[in-house]
Every structure is written in C-alpha cells, then in structure tokens.
Amino acid sequence: MLYHLGLLSEYLKNYMKTRLTYRADFWVEVLSDLLFQVTNLIFIFVIFMHTNSLAGWSQNEVVFVYGFFMVPWGVFACFVNMWNFSERYIVKGEMDRILTRPAHNLFQIFLENVDPPSLIGSLIGLLIMAVSGINLGLPFEWWTVPALILLTISATAIYTGIYTTLTALSFYSDAPTGIIPLMYNIQSYGRYPVTIYNRAIQVLLTWILPFAFVGVYPAGLFLQREEMTRMALLTPVMGAIFLSIGLFVWSRGVRKYKGAGS
Amino acid sequence: MSNRTSVAAASPGGGYKGDEGAERGQRRLLLEAYFDFIRIRFLTMLAYRLNYYTGILIYSLNIGVNYFTWKAIYGQGESLGGFTAAQMTTYVAVSWMARAFYFNNLDREIATDIRDGSIAIQFIRPYNYVFAKMMQGLGEGMFRFLLFMIPGMALAMLLFPVQLPHDPAAWVGFLVMLFFSFLINSQINIITGLLAFFVENNEGLMRMKRVVVDLFSGLIIPISLFPGWLSSILKLLPFQAITYLPGSVFTGRVQGVGIWNVFGIQIIWFVILLIPLFWLYRAARQRLFVQGG
Image (cartoon, rainbow over all chains, first blue to last red):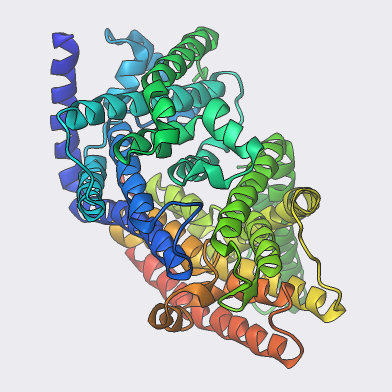
C-alpha cells in the first residue's frame, strides 16, 4: 500500500513537470472541462425557464443532483483515465512494457494517466451542492460528510467497473471500439430524475449501465427523497459488484493479450 | 494508411511544363486520387461496420432519453419556443440522426498527423492536404449516411412518434442542407485540427469544440428555446447552420421561401469559413516544425 502511494506521488510530480511544458494547453484543457460543465448547467437552466418542475423535481434539486454527479466524476477522471487505452497500449504494444513493471498492470496504467486537473470539477461540484443545498434549506447532519465520502467512493467504483470492462474489450478485438465516447453521453442521463424515463430506460440506467447510481440515487439521500433512499443505500453494493466485474473481465483480457509484434 | 499508396501511384514524375496534354492527364490523375480518398475511406469504414451497429443502438438511446426529458418538460404545455411536442420529438430524432451523418474526427486526425510529424510527408505530396482530408471526410460521411443514419432513422421511427414531412420541398431542402451541415462541420473540424500547428497539443481545444458544437448547434436545445439574448448571439454564429437550420426545415417550422433564407445562411457560412481555413493552411505550411521527427 505504502509502495503504491509512493508511486502515485512520484507520478503526480512527473505529471506536473510534463504539463508545465505545455502550459497554455493545460489551461485550455481545464477551461474546456469547465465549459463542458457549464453547458450542462445551461441545459438545466434553460429547461427550467420553460417549466417549474421536472416530474416533481425543482430546479434547485436538479442542480443539486448535478453538483453531486460532478464529485465522483472528477475523482474518477483524475485517477482512472483510460481514454486512449486501445490506441496507446494495444495498437502500439505499450502493454508489453506495462506487464514487465512491478506494480499491478491495471494500477500502472492508472498511474501513467493521472489527470489532477479533473479534481477541479469535483470542487466545483461541491460548491454547487452547497449553494443549491442552502437554497433548499437542506439540513446538515453528522452523517452528511461521511455519507458523501462513502457514496463518492462507491460511485467512483461503479465508473471504474464499467469503464474497465469496456476498455478490456479491446483485448478481444483489434478494431478500435467507438463505444467509450458514446458512453459519456449515456452516463449524463443518470443525473436527471430517472422517473421521467420509461421503464426500459429506467432498468437500463439502474441495473445494466447503472449510471443512476452515480447521480440521482445517491443525491436523493441528501435531498431527503424517500423513494430514492433505498437505492442510495444500495450504491456501495453496486459499486462493489461492478468493480469486481470490471477487475474480473480485465484480468481475463490481460491473459489474452499477445503483444503487437513490433 | 492505404490511401498513401494510391496517391503515390497517381502522382508520376510531374514537371512537364508547357506540355498541355500531360498536364491535363496529370489533373485527371489528381482527380482520381481525390476520388480514391473517398473510396478508400468508405471501404475502411465498411471494415469496421460492427462498431456502427452499437452506434445505432446508443444513438437511439440518446434520442429516447431526450424524448422523455422533453416530454416531462412539456407536461401539459402545448408549445415551447415555437415547437409543439410532436415537432420536438421529430426534431430530437432527426437532429441526432443528422449528427450520425455529419460527425467526423477530422480534427483529431489532423492533430495526430501534426503531432507524429507525418504531416510533413503529406505536405510534399502533389495534392492539397486539406482537400484530401475533406474527401476522406466525405467517404466517411457517405458510409455514415447509408449504414448509420438511414437504419438509425428507421429504428427511431419505430420507437418514437416521429412525424415525417409530407411536403417534397422539405425533403429536398433537408437533404441539401444536411450536406452543407456536413461541409460546415468538417470545415470547423479542419480549422480546429490545423490549430494544432500553433498550440502543439490541442486536445483541450478539440474537446471544447465538440461541446460547443453540440450545444450551440441546437442539438441539445433548439436555439429558439434559449433566452433571447443568447439565441440572438447564437444566430450570429456558424453552429446553428449544422443542426438547427436543417432540423427546422425538416420539422416544417420553416416552409416555402423560408427554406431559401435558411439555406442562404448555410451557404454564407460555408463561404466565410473558407477564409480562416485557407489562411490557417497557408500559415501552417510556413510554420511547420516537426516535433521529434
């Protein structure tokens, strides 16, 4: 554990050094991430210019869910970033090098792709939660912070599970799978009250691609939404299940890896 | 990769100045080379067609989620920003499926060519790099139109109450405007890609562009639903020409002479965007330094 933490800090230092060489791009990237979040907020604000409630949820509640959604997403994007895995590691054969490293291969890949600026998104998410929480007059209980931490970790585990599974597919197929960028669209649907969707989409977002567990369900706990409480408490379980699936598929996939032959 | 060989074959020697026949022959070869760019990209895409079946499903899901979201927003209301609930359904479906056609990664491809230095080789070849990229985009677009957009639209019509226009002018207008959506989107992509010459690593810029295009083109929210000041700004930007204008024609919100007006806006943007495109291309050729080589 200590060894892995040491590695992490080394890679973070390394990251800062490489990023400072492309300083302008660094800020453009931070800015573009923020802009992405702003556009999503614009969507919410525009919607509520035309209606008072979205299936019984007020604007402040929907914004609060959005704020919560940003927190685990930022943590995930910082520490688990497999955006270019197929191109970088499979096609170019870099996976060979990974497998010879002492750290676990998946951990090594996470390390090489740490992206600390993403955490700025988490901070902004917390801020949004605070502001809309005050607007709603939500109570701040003794369990608020521990629950927030636990739910953030669980949601991050769900993300990690899903994306590790999808990334591991590139061990089986040489063709670049275009699935992951498309997934980014789908996950964003977990931050609206799922009750507005029909049954099929609800089931999909709850049990198959459980993105409702990274947004509306856990946030419902803080919003004192009775109908979501049970689901919110299920979040850690879903996190454990999906993380296990991801790790299992990954380790099966790595065994299939044969190298690029160059 | 395979397109390189075809171009090499199509560019023999060169330098017969004054010999008109040879020059004409060379021009024909060049034209064939451009045609090959389209053909080869189409075939490459065909080889990876499996990805697009999942794409159709995921786009249908996108339409579904947007459809139900709008349904919840409409509630009892009849009309928002000039859209009836039925028009909104059609608008959402046709906008996403239009995106299935016009979307491409030319910006990313150009940025990769610049970053790994292979652009130097492509610049000395006897074809216009930007034009060749456009042709590759066209090959991809043809593939996406036939194997992604059309089956996707058919599926969306099965799942959601999409209303197709009865007026043939709306169909013709939509298809022509869709082609211009593709052209304008590709121009924006190429401009973003070429900016990699000036910022070395334009990852953030490309992401920003994607977000801006999706939001400001009217894909996520039709432009008439934005607050007044914002929608009047958006009407001065090229993005509305990608989704909002063709979608308005298809849903029948714009009819008759109005179609010519919105089509005119698209043409104007197509012409205006040529200016930064050529300027960047020229500036880029002078600025080129290959990183790492």
